[in-house]
Length: 633
Ligand code: WAQ
Ligand code: MG
Image (cartoon, rainbow, N blue to C red; front, side, top):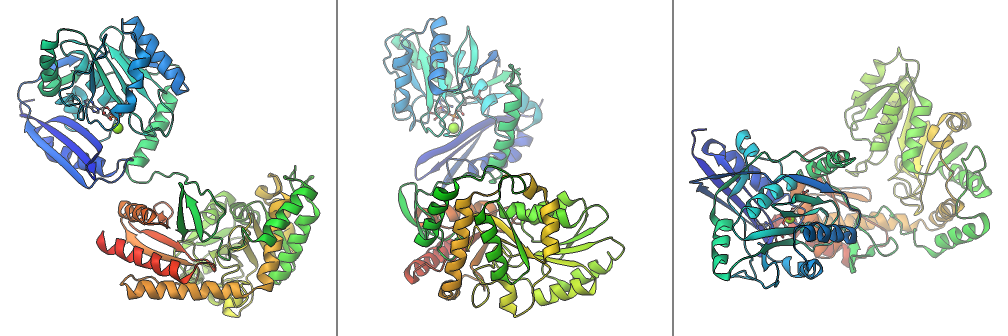
């Protein structure tokens, strides 16, 4: 290693508040790579996107090599258990008053550095209390050998820091709690006990965190301690790989996988809406306008629908208690299926517990080994999964390209059975299948035609009967749909000729091997269907709202077109889309960013879903906010 070594430090903040920081010591040749890796890391921190990133590159000068502290892992399951473990470990090393020390973590969160405490009197010794004392200019020998360290590794960085700290004159111990709300692991360290990881030391979701360094010695020597922590250059050797403490290793690999998702901006989380679905919802205590619900006709909270669910719960019970083919079929199930068949104008219908199950079950019932299934490249994941599970040869054709479909069908004449399947309205683009040509292509090639009407039922056609009504054309052979979107309940269904429905009932494993949907959901869907039949104005209201919204976006310079309730605004970059979505939420609009793998990489978008119940003011305000954020980012 003849190249000169450089210290590269990154610090990121947002509105002046610390977001993340990291540092490396690397040979000169690795400096550019390291800078880019650290910038990447700053931009993908779970605490938020920074508005300021400072990268400092300095020649490292003279470097001290230290042997890593030994590492042990203590598995704890609650914050209380973790704190008790910390107390026990430190007491063994002669540090008491742990409860008092732990209570100081309520003050460390805003600090960039650590609190420096007299281990016995608990007097605070940092010259700058707001900042604290920082241990810097350190790295592990491993990353030096690799030339640069890209991945972020809380563990290795913490061991390096703890090793430097325990080698500082006067320091007798350290306690660390991560400030990452999702990372509940912390540690205590002394030279005697080494680095003692504590797997749970705080409650999940808690932002509390920080570091406390414990000092013992004369006051006049504190400056020497701080000087070592803040200026001495240190490389730590032999940082142990994460110990495989009984049964711990397997969870670490899970955590590592999650970190990879986090780093690439693809991690997902549930957001709680503390109100019924509707055009406005309570998100984290605030009222926001919702442009992301598939409850297109505002029926999920309609009193006629909720009453039907309540009545059914009282009359038939909350759950069905069994599979449809054993004990799970009750009168509401049969009523709904009759109603669906009549509504769509087919001989028969079959209901499933979810739309996903309807697709997976139906496709795998219709085709298998020796058959061919042709699938649009932009079909919904439940269709893709159904195709894969079926065991048939899967042939993907170009999006809504009926010539491509026809050509590929013609090549499958040797297969026993052919099935072509397509979304009627594509869920992430909002465009409409060319139904007449789809059915023609299937017919010419003696193939079954199947469509997924998840986003067209209740939305397309003068009375919301779906895509066939929209085109004034006949039905495909198999018409799948959901009860969970425009029909405001939950579940999926298939409408078709009787023999097809019977085959599905006999072969669809998602139908046979899952508990029948409960009567409340089934009765709610049935009641919603009646509301849709008697109030077609709701369908008109969606159409009116969609044109109003897209016209307004166009007027503000945002290209967005749709004839359906789904209006995508293409952003491209994943993180940029996430960022815009986060800002829109701050401004009171819930509009999700849709990313890979739901859509192609670099085709991230805002997916706006329009409801009949949105008001003109809500839509204009949302369009203005979208245009503003898209233009300014
Ligand atoms: N010097 C002093 N204090 C620091 C430093 C530093 N260089 N860096 C961070 N702190 C303080 C600051 O107050 C942070 O808010 C707090 O520590 C936590 O920092 O699996 O990730 O970087 O074995 O969030 C520990 C467990 C992970 C690792 C700790 O700390 C494991 C962690 P974070
Ligand atoms: Mg942190």
